[in-house]
Length: 203
Image 1: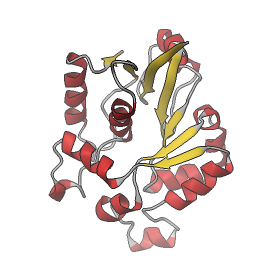
Image 2: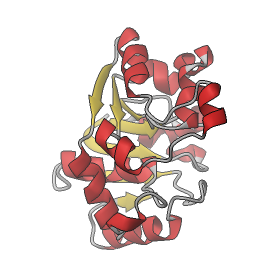
Image 3: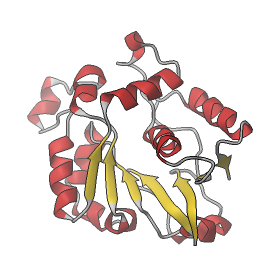
């Protein structure tokens, strides 16, 4: 094991040859519901879980989600949105959706579920979310239409929590595509700039 390295595994394709490097890292970070099998390694230390919106409801109401290896095996779950962020920026379900039990804030349910599984749960503050928006140049008036991805939030978190001179950070499986309200082009450009300056490595 390389005790002072961080592997952040995205939800895009991962080279099977990377599995051993991922599992030998000192800290492995994944997010939401990773789609990979053993080709992306088997370890997870920190799981970022999006605690807002329809996907949060889907995962928390699905018993098989808690049995997912990345969920069952992680020691800590990080909820990237505090209630102020959700109330201030996130879309609200319409009337019919609310009748079906949907709402925007799944923080309390996530804490209940993950703590019930013996996980440590942490919630990131509003200041962190707004820092990430600033990094992507999402203006305050645009923050109800554009959102940093969970993966981007995880990268910024790791860069703040793990000093790069002591904990090299490597990214695996980032494809920079998905939900239309994420600015994938800006996120990729930001990461490439950090890679060029030696602050992280894109594998």
